[in-house]
Image (tube, rainbow, N blue to C red; front, side):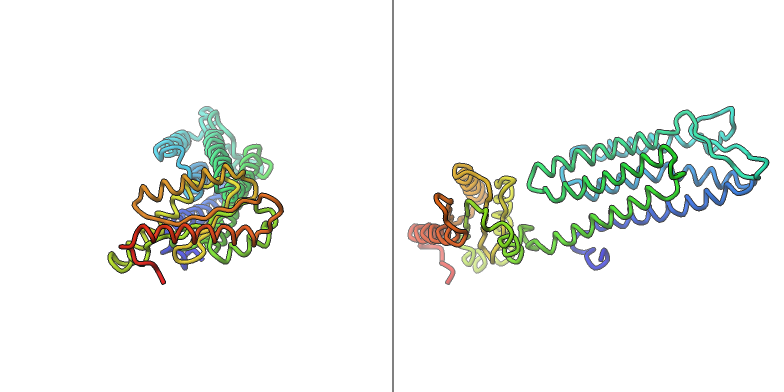
Length: 351
């Protein structure tokens, strides 16, 4: 799936690939560390593998942030600094591995069983603290998304991060002996989120990222009875732009209108691209005043981009069903369109 969709979103796919590769590497290091503890002659192998484990775990969380963070609340250098501190704090343990120098971690010899025993040092929990800070950031991002128009993204990210938190806690208190819990959880969470994104992308229009017509009918079957207001938007002059400036400019206009819609609607509203230059918004809770304000905001932003649209709005005043609201909004939009072309004879109307 990642390979097939790589061209559509290279950055996202690369982050997914990095998480899965790091989880694989972490699994290998855990197994080699356990192998290194068997016998007292493999202390170098066990030490190197332990070091890599401490370094890699927070990096997996970092790539999960890169994959899921739409808010960009903190610059990249903050994360790089945290990961660098973590890497440096465990580095001395590669060379100081005696009971007298309990820095980050060290091994002692169990002569009876001929094995190495892992011991925590003074700064052993640096990796866990860095991981906790990264997870806290993920939780903040998830709540920010849930308070915006990305509620589903926020819920999925929060769910994934909670599972990872549990894995980090269990590894920190040694309930699982540190064996493969975080990397398994991170990998599964990554795949889970990727499947969510894959499903969500199939619900959206490829050009504008608004919900597509198929999703409109699916959503309508679920919430149609609760819709209180409908806005219909139809671009004016798209044919004129396509004929005189080319279809690329036409696509640019469509994307500009979609951006105006996305940046204006509220949390309880859903926006759809119904066709070439046709858009629809419905709301399940907004007041009429709120819908009017959103419509005016969209109008202003579209005009600032140099494009024209016709608009229609209908609000449930009594007990109108959805079909009646949609029809009223459509009639208002066509009336607005007719008035527009009366004023702009130079723009050829689409037949």
